[in-house]
Length: 95
Image 1 (cartoon, one colour):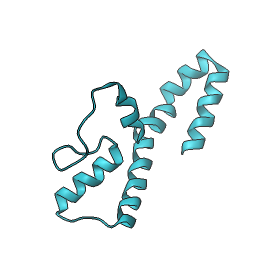
Image 2: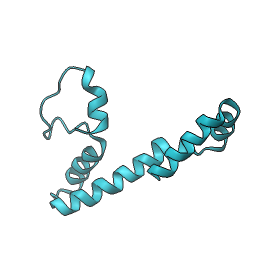
Image 3: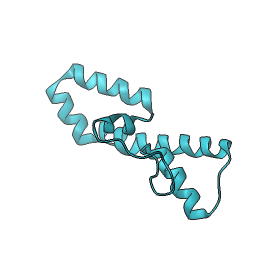
Image 4: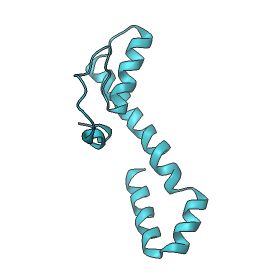
């Protein structure tokens, strides 16, 4: 189960993924949508490659771009030197 699906665990269960109900995992949803748009089914290897590219893109978009933004960096330094160092370590770890 992906992180988004886990976070949504408090909501009522959805039907199994299908053409009508795509998966909740964002990377898998992207693969599902791309298959539908292109009219083809990807191999396991292609799916794995697409999923890894999507995860990397989501990390940048949703985490790293915010964690490394100059305004956030400045504010965090002013609030907590320890917090700033921890966020910097996390950013390097997931980059």
